[in-house]
Each structure stands twice: as structure tokens, then as C-alpha cells.
Length: 131
Image (cartoon, rainbow, N blue to C red):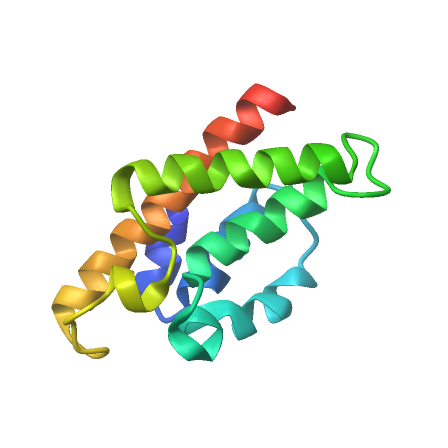
């Protein structure tokens, strides 16, 4: 996955997922700067940045005022994404997902690379099925 390459080259988890979607022509480039604030669990350790970025993409593609969807469809897809993510990871909270890992450790980097990969895979499946 391209997002994992971005993550391992210095982009944050949220930026990496968004950057891959931009590269695929799914969303506008302007959303990259918005994604910065979502990394590290929005700076507080809450929602995983890769999950947040995936939700941004779903909202952009299927949200209110979009020809592909509406707020009901966007919420349904957002819920589906979370359910799929939780099947493997049981939680969406960055603090929970990375509990016991030092922020700068190679272990955490590898773990977060996995989160980025999983988010892009789930997102691709949802988008493929629903486009």
C-alpha cells in the first residue's frame, strides 16, 4: 500500500491515508493539510489518525451534497468502516491501540504502519462495493 510508504517516509498516519486517496484522484489535495490535525489521535491519543482520515474520505465521497450519497449513506459507510476495523483491532482509540509502546519505538512505527495498511484496505473494499 502506498499509504504505508508515505507513513514510513515521514507523513503522519492520517496524512498518509489521505495522501494515497489524493494520489488515486478520490479527494482534493487541499484535504492533506486538514489531515495533519488528526495524527496521534488528534493530538490527544483519542481516535486513531488513520481511522479519522478514512472517515474524512468516506464523508468526502458519500456525504451531504455529494452526487454519490447523502448524510445517511455516509454515516452507514462510516459505521461499516468502524465495524470492519474493530474486527481486527477491537478499538479505534490510538491510546488503546498503542498501549505500552513508546512513541518513538520501532515497535510502535511497525504497529502504526499496520493500522495505516488496514485502514486503506478496508476503505478500498468499502469504496469498491459502494461506488
